Length: 352
Ligand SMILES: O=C1O[C@H](COP(=O)(O)O)[C@@H](O)[C@H](O)[C@H]1O
Image 1 (cartoon, rainbow, N blue to C red):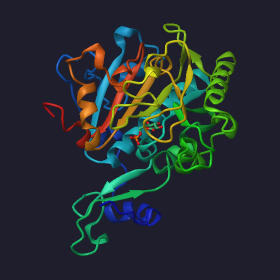
Image 2: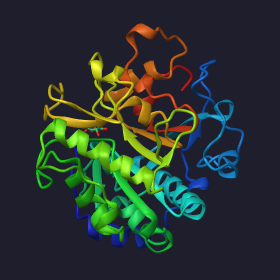
Image 3: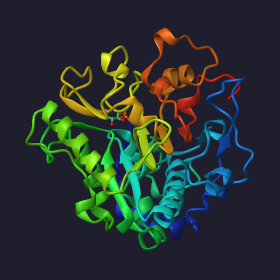
Image 4: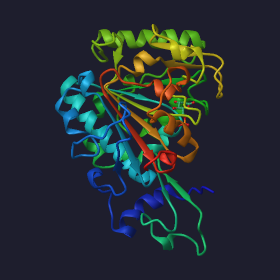
């Protein structure tokens, strides 16, 4: 069972009760990095920081294909994952804001937003004082507060929010105030808490059809490429976002690119639409693989045992091109791909 407790109260009390503040990510307990077999998609970096490899920081994010990196990070708790993800994002924000004067960030919907704002606890957890729980209470507890990690000091003050430009890798074709809207999810959970200029948050036009909204979003991206806000990949000829924060469904879908759907083979469009999504709601728009795979950085945030199967398949050495899951088709041309996982998500990997 998952129980919500007073987030604000817990947030206020936690550092006092435990005598702890969030540790620097390089000292986050429970973090592990591993190499799996000879899978060329996944390697362990020799860089000392588990968060952002030094080699990547030394480049402009345009590492050569030979330098492209794939890293698996596994955390004991969602709290640890969220702390690390916030630090990773803040470091990239600093890097790109300094270099380009802009930081283009792509969000997905679903559990990704939770990863920016939640931690798990139980009476047995060292992260929350046991006496906060009633006697005999053993359930898992999920404590959430909106945008806590990046909206807290030091990030609230130190991140150059005015340089952020925010996009969605996919969006459901529903009004922006609809419960299914990825915009609403991100706005309520994160964007409403940080001072990103509203004109730099690029939601879809929810007055249009799926087809119209995809065309409109692609036109918007093209305009932003022209004005220099979004970079272009010299290698692929597609837009190159600085950071894509992605999630994966239990079926291995990413964005709104579903297993076996013809959209996974789209090679020309930047943004396309789907009217028969197997996951409701049926009408969505989505970035295509050429755009996803042109990113400088991707953080793939995957938690929970329900996703262990696709994680195992994605990180397996044995691949046949005929039955690739969408998550397996996310292969950066020239960038860094980092998995942010918890232990249940990697539970089917050998040599865990
Ligand atoms: O429908 C969607 O699902 C995926 C995965 O969601 P999750 O809740 O299983 O993490 C999400 O990444 C995508 O943006 C969303 O539209």
